[in-house]
Image (cartoon, rainbow over all chains, first blue to last red; front, side, top):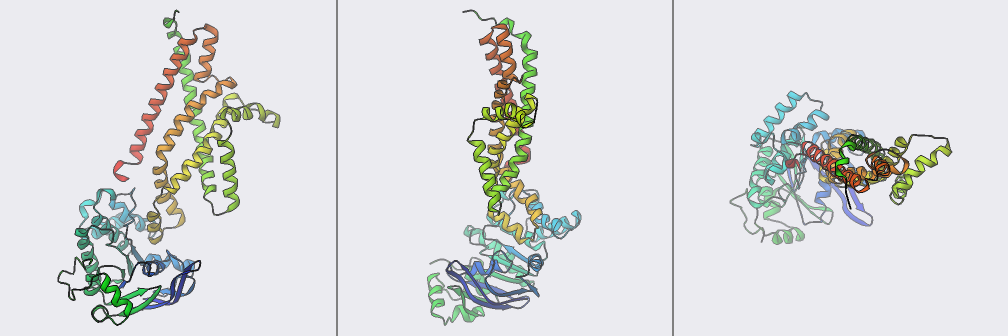
Amino acid sequence: MIEVKGVSKSYGAHEVLRQVSLEVEPGQVVAIIGPSGSGKSTFLRMLNGLEGFNGGSIRIDGHDLSVPRELQQVRRQVGMVFQQFNLFPHLTVGRNVTIAQRLVLKESKAAAEKRARRLLDRVELSEKWGSYPSQLSGGQQQRVAIARALAMEPKVMLFDEATSALDPELVGEVLDVMRSLASEGMTMLVVTHEMGFARNVADRVLFMDGGRIVADGPPGRLLDNPEDERLIQFLRRIGNHERSDPTPVSGAQPA
Amino acid sequence: MAFHWTAIPRFIPQLLAGAQLTLLITLAAMALGIAIGAAMAAGRVSRFRVLRLLAGLYVEFIRNTPALLQIFILFFGMPSLGLRMSAVTAGSIALGLNASAYLAEIFRAGLNGVPAGSREAAIALSFSRLHMLAYVTTPLAMRAAWPAFCNLVISILLASSLLSAISVYELTGITNDISTKTFLTFEVYSIAALFYVALNIAVSLLLALTGRLLFPPQSR
């Protein structure tokens, strides 16, 4: 589904990503963890062309990201959920979820609205159809943003710290939606600080540091028996003390 | 000192006609200003250096010369280039050019006020450039620029009084005329001032109403 080969990225002399390679199978849920500045968000944003890359190649579902025309194809198949939600503030919830279907997929109004209502129902926000984003809580906005991305019927969903800007009591409702997506077999790449999610939902965890993927493996092995010294330090810093988190929804508590 | 307020009512129709012309000139100047201003704003954020430079020069040149001088250039100067226009036309164009420079800056600030996240979301949703411009950038930039835009409309309405200097019978011009013919100087100018206040309040209310319709408060 996703094939990344030797991708690098630098801003001037500063190297953000160094020779990153990765293959992700369809249906895999990959959590990407690492300290800030490790390049994990940049890497994720590269996968739908929000960031360019200097060397190497990226193919998603067979499409080569370095070819401009294929890039548009890729963006249709890759949904993105942002830390700051990035809903269109001037459009109602309903319009936020239908607009790309109408403009990009050329769906009829009726078909677009039907799908939007189904997706809003799924994130339990069908009653907010006519509301504007500013009238919703952060958690609600993020669930609308997930519905908006799903409306394009993507094959891959990217989550860029989707719960980091939320008040702690709102994190759970967003993670619940993400968990249900994962259980339905959506291919997901999730940059996150929620160790509970990484441990309980992800099939695979990547640890990034200094622009490289330093460790890659199933969450049990990576989080409970880390071998890499930097990963051990990182896990200690974010307070990964409790080995099996009884309340996975709320994730790891900061130390 | 004796005032003759009772003599004023018979000049009201003339003053109303003047006020009407003031509004028309303002409208024409704003229409021209919006067209050129939008083009200049696009120039100022263009990826081509030459366009940025030319648009910048235009804006700075207009903003650093007096509006009255711009009116004189259009009305007295253009005929020597073979372009002869009526005073109303020349004056409206001059005011429109004047407005365009300020509007270019207002629109540019509006573009800067578009949240980067909204643009990224549109890109991630695979919007074409045209769709992004039409459905995301323009409405959000207009929303951000609206208060400054409303202020400029009032400024241009007031500046239209400068056209009296080239004998346009807008509100100030007609007032001058009545004043010199009747010597009711204080009375007619005071009444004209009230007319301006009334015009501006009406225009402001109309703009505020339009703003509420275009950009509902909850959509901010």
